[in-house]
Amino acid sequence: MKKKYTHIFFDLDNTLWDFRKNSRCAMEVTYNNFEIAELGVEFDRFYECYSENNTALWTAYRKKEVRKNELTRQRFQLTFDALSIKGIEPDQMNDYYLTEMPKQVNLIEGALDILEYLKAKRYKLFIITNGFREVQYKKLQNSGLGTYFEKVFISEDIKTPKPGNEIFEYAIKSANAKKVNSLMVGDDWDVDIMGAYKFGIDAVYLQPGIDQKATDEHGGVGKILNLNELVLVL
Image (cartoon, rainbow, N blue to C red):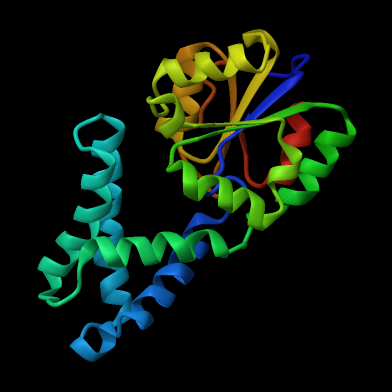
């Protein structure tokens, strides 16, 4: 799938910024601050329940079935209800968590190395991310990732999330890029990879291990096991 790529668009969470690790760290700080252990709920149980609710609500949010304020409140309220936690305001806990989240700076292995390489090779680099504006920009700033990117495209700003065509079209036009010279790199098959594929730009699927979704049946889609392998498809 090698082409003359000039513009590379990266997803942020779990592609460059380690969302899984950072989210868990931020939630543990939040859990301790609100003294949930005193209520008889272990952290692992709390986090597992929260994660299930959060994932389901984000899926609904991408489909525009819930609004932002509903997502942020319900992911905690549903967790409280399931675990019989009382006396904590869900919006207050959400605000605390979102303050702690961008303080975490764990990156996916090889993130800075590949970005340094691409900048040295004069590729134009961009971010396309689903998320909340105030959080995503802080993640980029605090982790040191922000300096590598010419522009950052956040779904909340553009009013449409991946995998919709609109966010990819907006990013391509704003970056003065051409589809044929553009590449999307992400870890979510449905959101990043199929979103880019259906829009008409090539994509690279970052997915350690075996995943049968990433096969040759999708022309213009490559797979890498780690970020360092990206150089092999450029």
